[in-house]
Length: 111
Length: 113
Image (cartoon, rainbow over all chains, first blue to last red; front, side, top):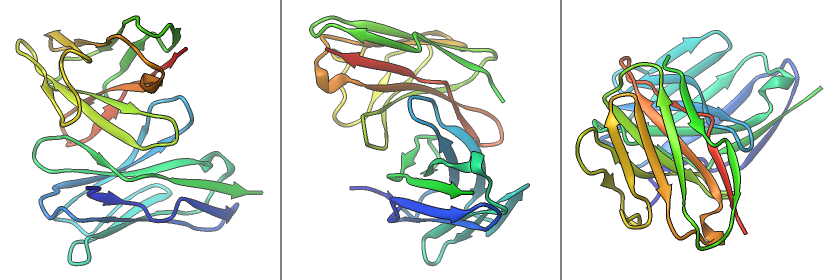
């Protein structure tokens, strides 16, 4: 039973434009939500996180929005750069630090 | 953030053999985990590495197949035993730090032939 879902397997965006990645979850006990960027055969790189008590967190070009009532979060990347091309994973954990991951979204930034 | 080093970074293994992956963290951490990413799939938690006691395994993973050691707060090992091609994956060590962020090592990419 997948508790974290990323329904868009891929996203193509032009350089300089906004990338919006979406994530849905089913477990209302999740305390923290995290986004990771990953290249093939490498470990995930932490990007940004948000606590369940907040609805927005911003760090440079990255902003994460959380809608608890809809059990939905999104990652906005503005402006998108060629180096942003990678697989992005949404993940979440309850009070045990055990991450549940979504399936990932492959982002391609076009020049 | 913690610096997490894994060895080996990649290896090609013969089926039926076992391989031990090491994870070294540059600071003491309480929570340490092992994940797996099979080709084309997402990341799945294998177990929590508990310091001074037996690891806690997730459903579908057993100690005989994936024995884990955690002798102190900066080091852990994961052994993949009696490997088959289905064990070809990236194995990842992760740690939870203050601030509620979870960081990952670079991964160990195993190919079983």
